[in-house]
Image (cartoon, rainbow, N blue to C red; front, side, top):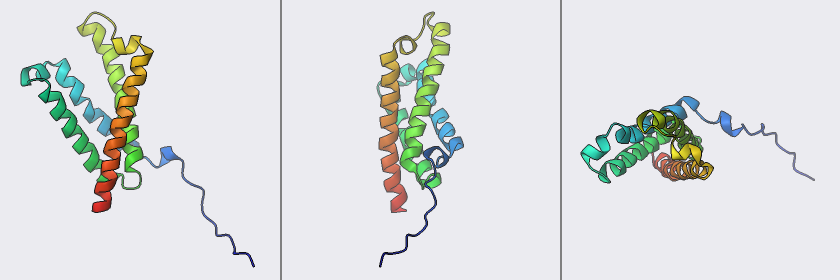
Length: 139
């Protein structure tokens, strides 16, 4: 006798498991890091400490927010956040570089740089998301 198969609803697509307002909010918060450089505060407060501290604070905020508000998919949420941040940073650079430097941003003119920025920030989100998942499980 064969067991009766049980019904399970189809898996929800990945993009519907995300809280897009959370993703966009966290990515926008991360823009504080390049803004520290643009405004000159990173130089004034001291490099390399300022960007490193900013990155650590952003990562901590991402982890806590994902552990609290994205318990179903913290890793996916923070990978999406990293990619969204990368896209926003590229656009910010494309808009501000001609105004501030008088020339196009090297990120915008070099497709390999775009891939590098996207990859780096996806990995950042992946690591932060893994830590957020551990944090959520510990709660």
